[in-house]
Image (cartoon, rainbow, N blue to C red):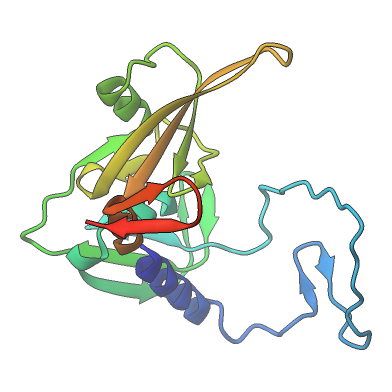
Length: 199
C-alpha cells in the first residue's frame, strides 16, 4: 500500500509541477533565515481537514472513485496508471488533473462500503462507530467510502467507552494485506523485554 501511495504522490507531483515554490505550507510559515531553536514547550495543534492543495480526480477502471479507495487496492493487481493534466468537474467539485488506474483483467474487485462492511462482519449494526484503516482514522461518509474487500487482512472490533464523558462508540480497525501488516501478523509477541518470534 505504501508503494501505491508513493506512486500516487509522485504522479500528483508531476501534475502540479511548474508551480512557483513558496515558503508557505498550509498555515505554517517557514523562515529559513533563522536557525531552528529547540522548543520543549507543550503545543496544542488542531488538525485541519481543509487542504489548500488542489487534488486530482481518481478513476478506477473508468469509474470515478474517491481517492480513499486507492489506499485499499492491491498494488500488485494494478495493470496501468495514466495521468491526465486536464482539470475536470465531478459532482460540482473541481479536480485538478486526473489519475486513471486500471486493474489487471484477471483481478476481480470486490468493493464494499464501510457501512456495509460493518453490517456484514460485526455485531455493531446499530452502534455509532469510528473506522481506522492501517492506523489512520477515517473521517468521511461511511456509506460512500469504498474499500476493496479482497485486500483486507484483518478486522479488529473494539470499543471506546468513557462513562464520565458519555462516550460509547464502536471502533473498527481494518488492516490491509500490505507487506508490513502480513509480516506483523506472523509475529508472536511476549511480555517483558522486546521479543518477537516469527512463525
